Image 1 (cartoon, rainbow, N blue to C red):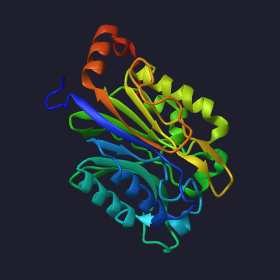
Image 2 (image 1 turned 45 degrees about the horizontal axis):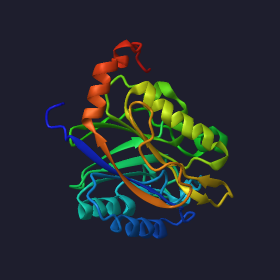
Image 3 (image 1 turned 180 degrees about the horizontal axis):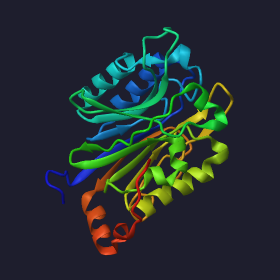
Image 4 (image 1 turned 90 degrees about the vertical axis):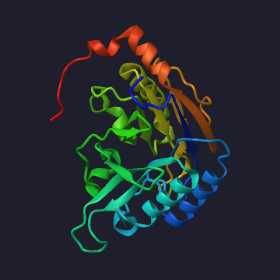
Length: 269
């Protein structure tokens, strides 16, 4: 065990429908769901673009980084005394300046209000995301309660090199708006990322229908380092579930199997 690593990490996944392009309504929606969590948890995970749905209407919906949604996340994290994460549309300049860059930005907010961010690396070209959002280029490993957490966003799931566990992280985390028509790929790739990286792999997806009439069927899940699903199987409706991740599960299996010792040595450019 690493020094000061919490033996168990309790994570709560919230699978929900979203109100299309309505940040205020979605913040209230998730405030209610967070308030209803009765058991202790260390980390609450919300979907991708949880305030708006997966929209390209960034010029109308983007917030500055220190905007209302970050302030809301900080209030909720302090209230529940846990970390909260999810992604939001962010502008790098004050809105309507005319030269804005927009980002699909994940916030990981700690219980004390401090936060880390990750900008989605792989913009979804099938939906034209690259025409609206600037891609990130930095991997972010978050140290929380001694656990090393690697957060990624939706389409990043299709690119195993970006997720390759060269930094001995413990948890791989995806927030998503992954459509129903390709849900078989979501299920398979989450499981594969857990197995090949010998890590817990968490995927939190939305349900319902968005303003573009795309349907979402959830399938939010948590897999252990052996690729075994340890969350409730394939719910396609709204649910909140708290799952315990165990440090001893990671350490014992990595020590016994030693698959990560045989990984290829490479550097991302």
